Image (cartoon, rainbow, N blue to C red; front, side):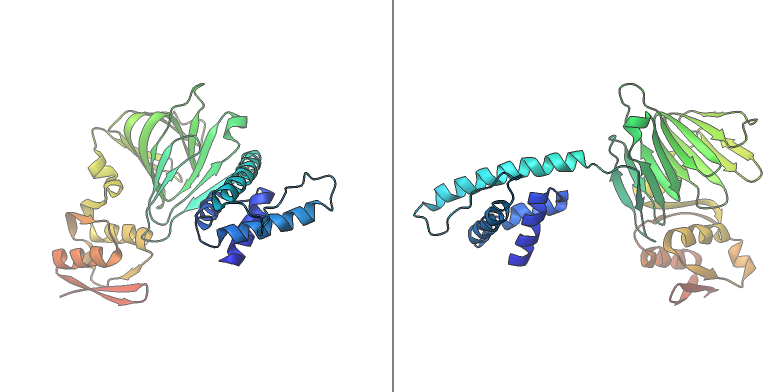
Length: 313
């Protein structure tokens, strides 16, 4: 614990503590040995700084002085408060710039709060990148690979929010929506607000979406399919913990499961692949999904690591 305290104290003074490390440092101060550790570190800091006239020395707390523990803790707290304000000031000044990336693994769902207050629920096997210089550039921009549900925060000044998915970009106008571009096509479902869908080809008209619209775009052929009056449970049920396989053939379901869980499926029975499914499966883990599908379709999954063979019972 002492080595950890020394490590965090040094980063505390340098102003390089992360928020997680800051919380850890505060928790260590509650330990019984914290007083002696703090005393030693402040004394070391005094010795170091006294050799450098360009620095303001911090007077150490004398371990052998006849102060009451309460008085000593008061001095230590005041020193830590000064150091704390300096550290957090440096952290704010050194706010990360450039592009930041967030990812999920197979079978993992992650909820994110972006610096602008927007919320993102990132589906499995997905990645978004966020431009930290959005305030300076006057534009909030995300690049998505995979699937995510967005709930965008409206900001004063109407700073635009754009989601890039390869050859398709979405201009967001105060809204919540789902985007899936893991397959060869990009699927967009609008739950609230408005969306303008822009194609890479400038000759293609902007697609204007209203709540309940679902748009499927093939970026290679520029083919666009649009449905109206759809619902969240049909178009983005994963957000609420359900994989909804409505009017889908087993072959298409297996493609979805490959994207989500990273499995490779083998099925020699073509008639089995052509079965139409109409069911909802709890989006928990692969074992749960496998069990529900096996019972519903009277099939078995024979697994060898990530290779899964499907046979009818």
